[in-house]
Image 1 (cartoon, one colour):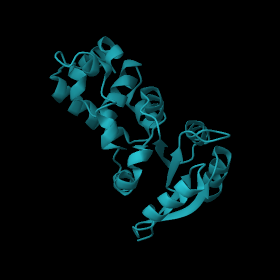
Image 2 (spheres, helix red, strand yellow):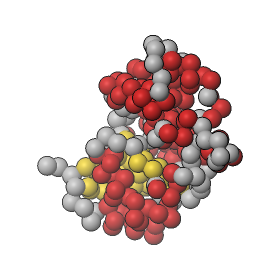
Image 3 (cartoon, rainbow, N blue to C red):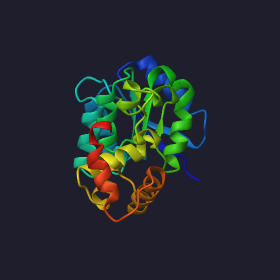
Image 4 (cartoon, rainbow, N blue to C red):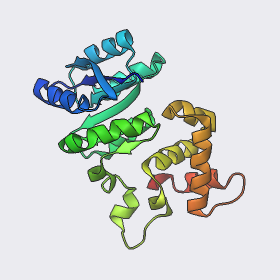
Length: 214
């Protein structure tokens, strides 16, 4: 079975080379190209069509988010994994809206990178465990004694629910998050179970009512 082809983009050569060595410890993955800025990363994605692009969010030229916007505009099928130094919910929310498959804190990437790539290869979403508590809905952080029902949801379910609140169809959500229609429907079913909702439009009404908590 051919190795999954990886593009690795980070503007710090030593960091980039370290990540490349970690990835290539596993024969299931092959780093086919490295890039030091966003323009080079986009050019390599267009030229080599890797299956996964591991992108630093903060790069010169185009940042990682801008690279993925261009990738989506050109309908390139690469899956995006973001690296970041920052525990910034705004970046996280934008990454999810762009269909990111992984979101890693750089400080933890040595431990998390291969686990993330394996999860992405299986069609799953991966977030650094060190970030998952920090990026829970705001309401939990603000009032732990009165948790929101949204706290029961995974990061991917939260991303789907936000798009439902924007009145996106399941097909539009699938296209935005680069997942299958069936996966969106499974997320809908799981959310209704977790949130104890029933009825055709109950999830839509819940999403709109709790939009500020997502």
